[in-house]
Image (cartoon, rainbow, N blue to C red; front, side, top):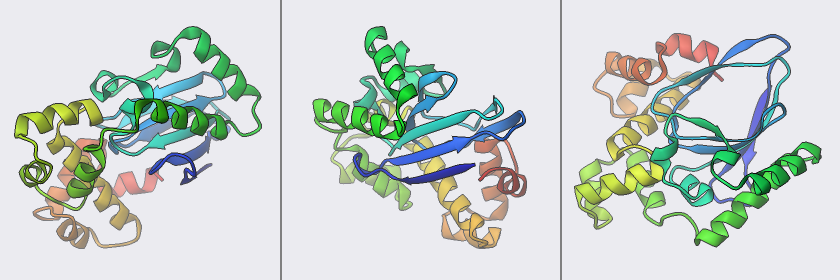
Length: 233
């Protein structure tokens, strides 16, 4: 029902496909620091902003989606506005770009055999026009994803704490500490999904102990780890 592959045209991005089952079902999207450009069979082109906590919605039976998920910090260069304006939001692309242009893209996607190619083409063109994403994004994410401290990351990048916070709001939708929490949770979930015991996953990802890991997962996703792992791919 869901699959994904690395994008061949947008660095660090992921193409994904999802088809809802034949019955109405709740869908839980976990925060990951990313923004998505999505084509929905029913709703056309949509933009998913960066989430601070899990977003829970209901998918229509048989609904088909094709999406392009940008790495943290890349979405603002594609969509042309700071990430904090889209934080915890899902909006039609017409809310960001001209209606005429969006209508044309919607029609092309609806009749395309492979709408993912259109998403990649649009994103690559926008990134080219913008000169690429903010160069701070990639090294900052790399440092935080490796478990580095926010203060050390700021110093390494030659930024003061306030500068880093402003850049992070624009790039990710929230401050660097929130981004670090989300990235760490995702690292821990990746380990748990491979069968690593919770206590080991907590130690390997920098949590004080297993209860600390459980509290963070619940705070960011709304579910305890065991329930989350059995209900979310």
